[in-house]
Image 1 (cartoon, rainbow, N blue to C red):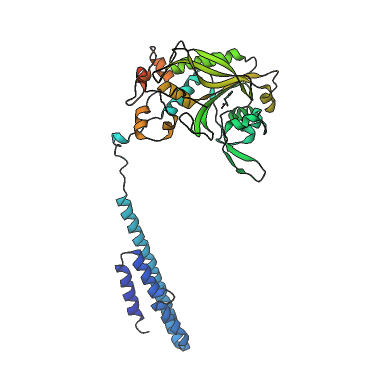
Image 2: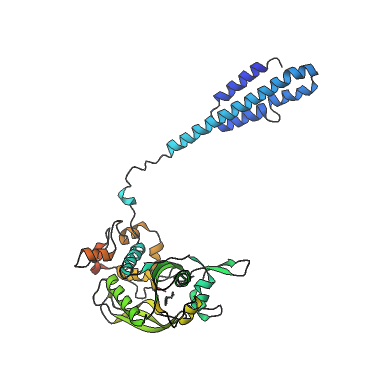
Amino acid sequence: MEDLQKLETDILKAITVLDNLAALEDLRVSEVGKKGRVSLLMRELGKMTPEEKKKFGPKLNGLKNTIIQAITDHKATLEAEELNRRLQSERVDITLPSPPENQGSIHPITQVMDEVTEIFTELGFSVAEGPEIEEDFYNFTALNIPPEHPARQMHDTFYFPENADGNRKLLRTHTSPVQIRTMMEGEPPYRIIVPGRTYRCDSDATHTPMFHQVESLVIDKDIHMGHLKWCIEEFCRKFFELDDVKIRFRPSYFPFTEPSAEVDIGCAFKDGEILIGEGDDWLEIMGCGMVNPRVLENVNLDPDVYQGFAFGMGLDRISMLKWGIPDLRDFFAADMRWLKHYGFAALDIPSLSTQNNNPGGRSQSNRGGSSSPTGDRPPINNNAGGK
Ligand code: PHE
């Protein structure tokens, strides 16, 4: 007991020379742990006379506290040293320019979204958005697709598990729910486009479980099918950079439009390539129609006062067409070689701006990287396209 001072000096010395946390923990256990040296000494207090207890009690307590404090301090020092070592070894110099082989590019879908957005904003449309995890009501019911409607089967929907209230959320199968959200949120007139991701349980060369659409909705007094036709023609001329683009409206059916049509674009299939604006073949690029009066009623608009049109276009499909990309799955494979070939330089500007700046119009030579010019497209699957 007399040697408490020496014991303290020895233990403190032993602590300071330790250079790792595991050894420090061992020391803590062997000195002040339950069966540690200092703890055992404290147990002896029980056998002492009251005078001895008075003398040694505070000393032993002081010793224990000093040691615990020294261990805590040393632990903090070791941890700080360890952190510094890691920071040094894992240091990244973010001021270094990235090597050319690691430089990124704009994905063709992003580029096409920018181009489509630019074309429609020039025509007076604004951009609206909605959630990708959607409620049944917006994706189906309000669009005149009630629960037993056969059109639901066509959508290959990804459903979430049922909620306590019996409703199932889903991944939106099209951008059309944003029509409903827009009409429920604000007052007419509406003139919107909705570019975004959509999901269906489907995968092959021309279908991926996630794909992109751009929706459009125009509602006002006196809107008719002529407006729809003009908008689509104008868009195709600008997007495909052709003055004389052939377009065909084929009668079709969508529960949320009446009448409904699918739009085909005139093209030629030659030697496994698609040429837009030539030949006698047709390729479907979108669904459209006049908004069904029932949909207007569902959002409390009077169909006798307001009418409008809507369309939904597959962005992936029009990208494949424009750039001659044969397999849709490659869009999402994150293959650096593909991205380099089909990607765009970060500062490329969307087509319309380029056209304005350059009255001769632009060609695909506007693309960044080592992309192929218009006449040099890789072969494309004749069945290429959207949903
Ligand atoms: N939502 C339809 C689809 O995904 C496309 C569409 C939109 C059709 C708007 C008509 C009007 O197939």
